Length: 485
Ligand code: BG6
Image 1 (cartoon, rainbow, N blue to C red):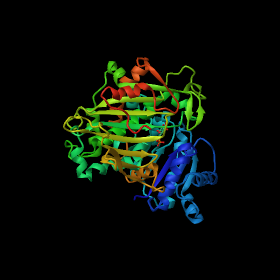
Image 2 (image 1 turned 45 degrees about the vertical axis):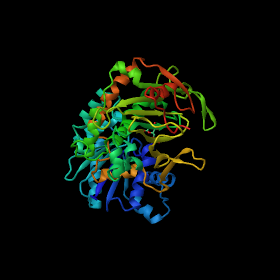
Image 3 (image 1 turned 45 degrees about the horizontal axis):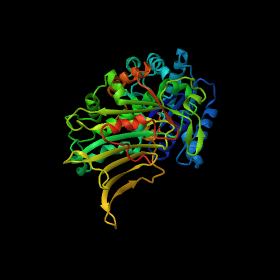
Image 4 (image 1 turned 90 degrees about the vertical axis):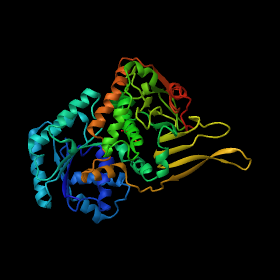
């Protein structure tokens, strides 16, 4: 891997502490970092290099999956870290940064490869990209890359504006947009699931599949993030990005589909075939909900509107469910159901594929026979199972599950894989601009309908599986959410 400078904006923030330093450290001890590298942390606070290295060490002691108990390794790792104070709007600070980057490149004999990671609030993305460009930091003899995290805009227009501004400083191939769901092991596994299992390839179409259910339920509420969440809601926070990425990933994987040659093009093809929702369709295809007081894992919890920092009469949704159709040869007439919510009964991110009786074209659930399922458990459990029917000793039909779960507690985390890919210039598991733009286009009528209050806000008890409208959405086609206990 190329030697490089890793320039981290937001170096004293939460994401850096919890995810980025542990990811770098784990890559380091697994020999996946370049032979030589420099990390330059940036933040508003004035702190010394020693204090900064102390913060990084503390983060590793608290959050690293590989315990940092070897003093020499720790010392070698920390020696790469320097800190520089930076106000994102001050041009002089970027000049100071440039000097430090160049100085470290010389000291460590690094090639001029520069990775800029913006672990800061999205409102600063444009100004930082602009200043990287104007200061000369982006003028290198090697490569330059930008890593940013969702949210990429608040709606279609703001996302387009942001992209336009970023593209003044970075080409699309240089921008790595992290959607951490794409770094999850089972999501990355979807790629090989069908391509390496010929028997699935034949089943992977509307001849055999009755419906696909994509769920990302969480037990937590809004936590300490009301300031952000109350202006975002589940649609922007989860649906437009993570959920639609999961949809693209599960729907694209058939090899030989169309003539799309790369994963990006295949995902784009799915978004192009996704049936657009007109504003008047939203009410029949989308459910929005908000939690009221209830129990979470046995403890009483307050309603969303009583959470600290949430506006009293807010209409912000903490739950969204939707029915989607992909109008192409493979998926025509197969409903995709997506739901995501906070304060749900259990934490579970999974994709369930329900197979149908090919002759009757119906769901096969009758006379004790359960539907055949392929279930991909993305988190917190990681694995998959197939559900089949068999006869028990009494001669009755009963479902059996053939499963395989990963027990690798030490498996690399999403951030490790994604940062490593970005360092290698591999953007397969990142969100590309055309996908992001098409997702916003698809979601925009829903955002408008929510803003204009055209869709009722259905209340659901904390600790439940969401509002009744969510079940009705599937009942309309004769289905139900599977695997809810
Ligand atoms: C984040 C959302 O992107 O994903 C959070 O902003 C959410 O609201 C989180 O809790 C869920 O991620 P995971 O990996 O815990 O399923």
